[in-house]
Image 1 (spheres, rainbow, N blue to C red):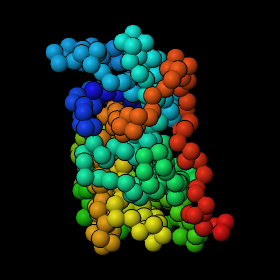
Image 2 (image 1 turned 45 degrees about the vertical axis):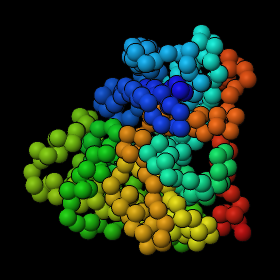
Image 3 (image 1 turned 90 degrees about the vertical axis):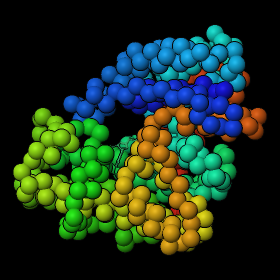
Length: 366
Ligand code: KG4
Ligand code: ZN
């Protein structure tokens, strides 16, 4: 068994990964309620909450009659990237447990966790594949050749896709995280009548940009007299109570925005597929739970004779099982164990080397 710990942002999570990479146990403590009223994650609150919830999660785990620390193969923990205070809490706990139980420690990059998360729910998935990590902090299109062999195809030049969803939700008056709310409201709409501009259409690039689209949504919301920002943030249930006409306007905005995002994502995949010819596509990260984007990508995969793999919704958003999955795959190759665990430092930046677009995909500088 591998014990995995994830605390990179606002969810404290632990998991036990058994032999063959299967999930044996998962525990999660969400902080959404603590941050919702601020319209985003407050780093200081997040670290403090991790400090309170991690011991509770570990106590729950220890109360399982089958759990025996002596039988652990290793402890895996998110070391980067994330809110550094949050990462530090999980890493410190993992170091302590590794020392106390005399077990190897495997530091894991959170982005690699998202990239490999679909293996948790799809044991038939295999390398290579073309995958998009779409979360609150990242929009990275990555060619995954094998374990640890990643090429950056394109990335966002401004907002991450999840961030754009959260900001659109906020300008319509909704609380954090707004992505799931916009997705649910978009699903109620029968129209997507607003033609928002598709960014970067005149440039040869696999990169993404969402800030212009976000501004276009703001302008449209202002024109339609729909609330742009405000003090008391609303929940999905508040939308259900709105007058029918207002609901219809909000639904149209959400669905038109969603349609535009789905087109952007599908277009980038389609263009990259012309170069890479992958038979497997992956959509992962919090935004992979999005119905509209999933459907558009499933259509593309179907047209091109490829298969789309998405984690189950619980494994799209932050979770510890994906961290355990990464550790499991490295351990199978006798890799991943940190020789000097106590010297490990938390890092806000990814260590995967996905900073620069691979020259093969840098069309603008060719
Ligand atoms: O992967 P994740 O849990 O945390 C990060 O590593 O960032 O992703 C959270 C992000 C948030 O921006 C949230 O609004 C977005 O994923 N999200 C969604 C949906 N569910 C979560 N965005 C669009 N549609 C959804 N259904
Ligand atoms: Zn994440």
